[in-house]
Length: 224
Image 1 (tube, helix red, strand yellow):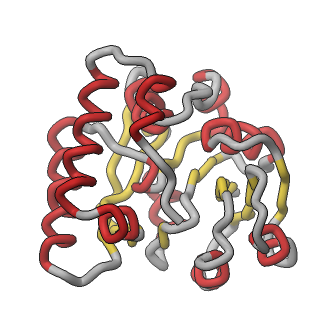
Image 2 (cartoon, one colour):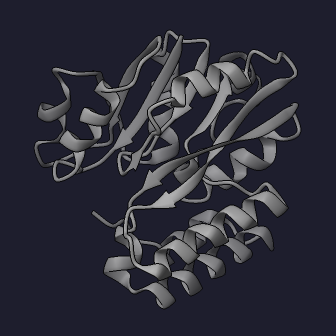
C-alpha cells in the first residue's frame, strides 16, 4: 500500500479540489493529512476524507509525523497544491516492482497556460534531468524502510526536500517517472515571475554553498 502524506497549513481555498483529484485515483492507498496549525477551515474540510493529525508548523516535521502513523510500505509526499496524474499509483508500483529502485519523483507541469509558465516547467524538468536535484513539488516517493534508514526529513525550515533528494540518491537507484504532476503556479503569479526565479535560484545556490536553511528562511515566505 502507498501512504500519501500531505502537509498542510491554511489551505481551505484549494483543499476541496485537491481531495477531489485524490478520490479519482485507483489503486491501494491511504491519505494522511498533517496539519501544521491551520487557523482556517482546512482541517474540517479534510477530516471526512482522510486521516488527519495535527502537529507543529514546519513541512519537514509534518511529513515526518505523517510517516510515523502511515501504514503503507511506500510513502508519497504530496503538496496540497500539486495534482497527481490519474495513473500515478500504478506508475509508482510499477517503478518499485524493480527491487533495485528505492524511490523517485515525477516530472512537473504548472497549472497556468501562459507560455512563460510552460518555459519555467521545462526549465525545472531540464535541471532535474541534468542534476537530479528534484524538489517536493515533484511528488517524492520512497520505500518506507529506506525513509526510516535515512532518518526521514531533516528538520529544516526550507530546503528539506532538496536535502532529502541529495541523501536519497546515496541509498540506491532513484527514478523519474515520465508522467507529470500539475503544480500550482501561484508563487510566480503572486510574487512575479522574474523576482521568484531570481529568489529561488539565490536560495538554492546559497544552500548548496553551505549557508544554513535557518538563515535562508528569512528570504522565503509562504504563498496561499
